[in-house]
Amino acid sequence: MTRESAEELGEDDGGSVVYDLDADCTADDVEQDTPYLAEINGVVDYGVFVDLSESVSGLVHESVLEGTYRVGDELVVELEAVRDNGDIAFEPVDTDEYELESVSHDYSLTGTNRLEANVGEQIHLEGTVIQVKQTGGPTIFHVADEYGVVPCAAFEEAGVRAYPSIEIDDVIRVTGTPEYREGSVQIEVDGLSTLEGEDAEEARERIEEALDTRAEPHEVDPLIDWPAFEKLRPNLREVAKLLRRTVLEGRPIRVRHHADGDGMCAAVPVQIALERFIADVHEDADAPRHLIKRLPAKAPFYEMEDATRDLNFALEDREKHGQQLPLLLMLDNGSTAEDVPAYETLAHYDIPIAVVDHHHPDPEAVEHLLDAHVNPYLHDEDYRITTGMCCVELARMIYPDITDELRHIPAVAGLSDRSKADAMDDYLELAAEEGYDETRLQDVSEALDYAAFWLRYNSGDQLIQDLLQIDNGDDERHRELVSFFADRGREEVDEQLEAAMPHVEHEDLDNGAHLYRIDVENYAHRFTYPAPGKTTGEIHDRKIEETGDPVITVGYGPDFAVLRSDGVRLDIPQMVSELEEEVPGGGVSGGGHLVVGSIKFVKGKREEVIDALVEKMEDAEIDEALSSAAPIDD
Image (cartoon, rainbow, N blue to C red; front, side, top):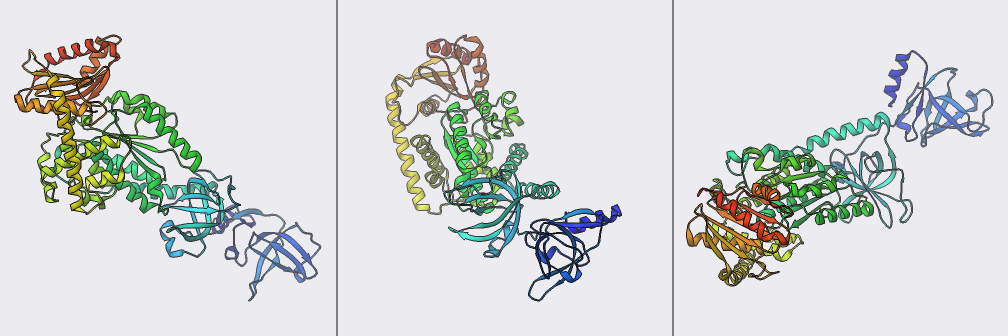
C-alpha cells in the first residue's frame, strides 16, 4: 500500500506505525518525520550504514547512536538530511512496540499510447501478459494495458527464458526504456515484477474497464435503409464487440468462410477491418500478419478435417510462439447440426466461436456451442439477406474508416448469391455511384468464383482484395484483371455445358414443375471449373430461360446430390431431415437454403434416396414468387 494508506491505518488503530519500504521504493518515497524500518549493511568507526530498500541507503552517524550493532540488525530510523552530493543521513527512532506497514513505490505510469514520446527514457508500465515468446536472444513479453499492446524484451542470456515465473494473464509492472526495433517501438526491460493482492486487483479492474469501453463497436449509419436488416443489427454489434475485445486482449482470430462469392464478400472486409484495428492496437508491426488468418472452406459446413487442422495449428502456435488459443469466426457457414462435431472438438480447449451466416440454421444443435450467432432466420427473415451484406456492416462497426472502400461489396455479394431481396436495387444504386454498373458487378462475381476454384484452400489474400478492389485504387488494372478472370470462367462454363447438356434428363412433375436431372459424375468434366454445384446451377439457369415455368434441377454423383429450385416451395433442410428417417442406412445428411441445397448419402442407396427426393418435390407447392437466391455449394 502507499504511505498515505498506511498512515490512515495507523491512525485508525491508535498505535505506533513504522513503515517498511518495498524493494522498488526510491528516495522520492522517503519523507521527513516518518519512521522507517532499516537493515544495517555495514558498521564503521563513524557510524552504521543502513538499507531501507534496494535503492535507498544512508548513514546513521555514531554521534546519535547508543550501544553496539552488527550487520543484519534491524533499526528504526527517520530521515535527517539529504546532502548536496546526494548522500542521505538518518537518525534512530526510540520505539519499543510498533505496527509494521509496507509502503509501495508510487509509480508514475506511462501508457502504451505515450511510448513514442518517451523513447530513450526509462518508464513504468502496468499491464496483462498476453503472449510470451522465447527467441534465440531475449524473451519477448507482449503486454496489454488500457491503450494497446507492446512487446517487452527481457534478456537473461541467449535463448534462456527470462523471468520464468511470469505467465500469460499475469498482471505485471515493467520498468524499462522504449526503443525502436525494426520500425516498431519495443520496451527494453530493466525490471519486471508480478503485481499481487490489492495492487493486482486494482490494475486488472482498471484495464478491464478501459478495454470494455474500447471494445464497444462504432456507431455507423447503415449503407441503405432496410428495415428487415435492422433486426440483425444488435446481433452484429455483439459480434463486433467480441472481435474488438479479442484484438484488445491479443488473442488470435481464425476466420473460416465458404469459398464462394458471398463468402469472400463477407470475409475479406472483416479481415481488413480487423488487420487495421490490430495495427492501431499493437506496437508490433507484424501483429496483423500473426493475429488473423482467413481460410476458405469448400464444404457448406465446418468439416472435422478443417477443425482438427485449425486446432493443431493453434496448439503449435501456443507452444512455439506463446500465443493464446484463437477465436474462431465462421462466415457464410457454420449454422447447422453438421458443424456440431467440429465445434465440440474446439470446446475441449475453450476456443470461443462466433458465426455470421444466412443458411438455414439448426439453433437447438449449435447455439450452446457458440459465443455469438447472427442469422436472418433467427429473426423471421431468410437467405435473401446475404452474409456479405451483413459483414460489410460488421466491418464498418469494427473500423469505420474502411467504409468508402466497401460501398460496392454488398451488391457483389447479392449478385453472387442471386439475392432477390427488395434492397438489391438500393445496393446496385450505391455501387453505381462508385463506378460499378451491374455488368461490372456481375464480372466481379464471376471472377471471384473462378479465382476461388483455382485457389482451392489458399486464401489468396492479395488477389482477392484486388478482384474486390479493396485497398487498391488502380481502376484500370482492376477492370482488366476482372475481365480476364470472368471471361475465362464463362468460357469454361460454356465448355462444360456443351458436354453436359445432351445428358440432361427431363420429366414433368404432377405439380406442374419441370424436373431436370444430370449425372455430373459421368457426364461433366471432373476436377476442373465449374465444379458440380456450379455446373448444376448453370444448367438450372438455362432451363429457366427456356421454359419460363417452375423448374427444379438435380445434379448428382455416386454419393451426393445438389439441388436448385425456382417457383417451387421446397424446404430442403426439412426434406433432408425426413429422408434421414425414411431411408434406413442411407447415411443422409445435408442442408442449405430453403430452395437451394446439397445432400450426401451412401453410394449404395443413391437410387432410393433420389427417388424419395423426387416424390417430395412432386408434392411441393408451386409458388412463382420463390426463386433460388444462392448458388449451390460445391
